[in-house]
Length: 173
Ligand SMILES: [Zn+2]
Image (tube, rainbow, N blue to C red; front, side):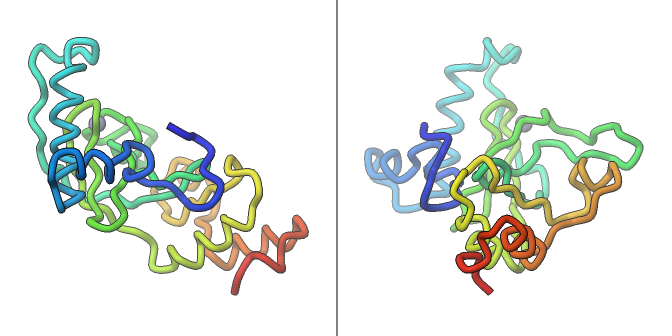
């Protein structure tokens, strides 16, 4: 896996090679390919992950995607205002952007994924940053950074940051 995609913000397709996996198994549906891949991974890894038997895939609600280091992720567990965590393993599965699901490859939880309304504008602003590690977008208030007192970001705030770093012309509007 290339952890430093240069030309796009990555998701499950890039992280797990979902397109090639779907082709190899004759599947048209990337969401189904993602679930099948997850069942295989969990069947293979369950002992190392501490499960006596492979976890079944189970729908576990909706999660909001955010960008961390150039990748869309969701958190498999919601942080609570008091600093504790809700149900989930705290892994950071990648959403499949088209079908808007994420499957946790360590515990089997399946999430519907909500993206920010300004996702396209935010991606454009982030792609203006040459170093993929600086491509982060924390737009919703439940992220631990905001619980600690930071402010949720917007595509506009990303562009302001870009301009402050001399990247304004490529930041999009
Ligand atoms: Zn999990």
